[in-house]
Length: 287
Image (tube, rainbow, N blue to C red; front, side, top):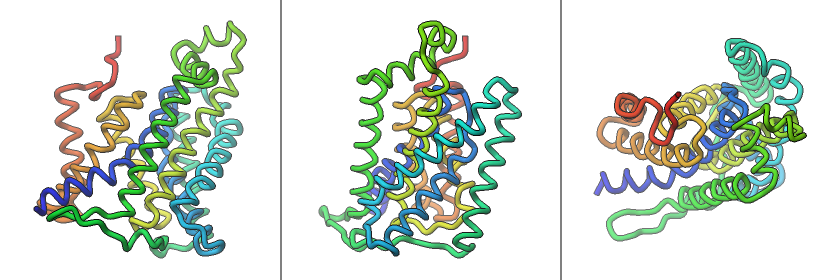
């Protein structure tokens, strides 16, 4: 029963992991930029949910809308002011820039909120539903439902709207998009903003479940990279499936070993999948 409980908890939490990874893979898929500040943006989504809960009494499972909007603005501004200037530069310059953004966001959070761990309180965090021998954490269930709905909404946006099609066209052939008059700079800024909005919403959804502090961003970024590599860089489906796999692997790792060693299972899964499919589960092999 403990194994079944761990698997169920892993699946439910995997929705948040998937939403977090979808934002990262969207930015990479459209711009070929690896956002090393992804985890720190998520931490700011958590702290914004904390401020809304303590200052205005807004439940984090409602505040995710505000968090997503705020992080969209942040992502849009970072792309326009910084990333847009080095798109043609070597990848090393892009990496250094995003690492710099990550350090700035982390230290701003340290100055604003201090180093102590924080958790957002929500009535749902104390509610459970029993299904025979196992129980369902209502907070995780709601987070899974909202994260899955947002991931589906992003998929529909990319494949059923004109802006989404333009975004995919710019990702597939930037030169061709420029020839037909597409404002590629605007498309890139929107893509970065949407990716940041995904991680902002994920931060609000996870804030009542896990304690967080400014340095948490590093581990979240590492987990995001693990997921998108397992699923395949640039694949939305891969990010969603990879998020579920990594979350279940970590949950089972906490059952078989101990919580502090749960990453051993997820990174072992990464190594195993890369040995079998170097491009990831849904990634395309380089031609």
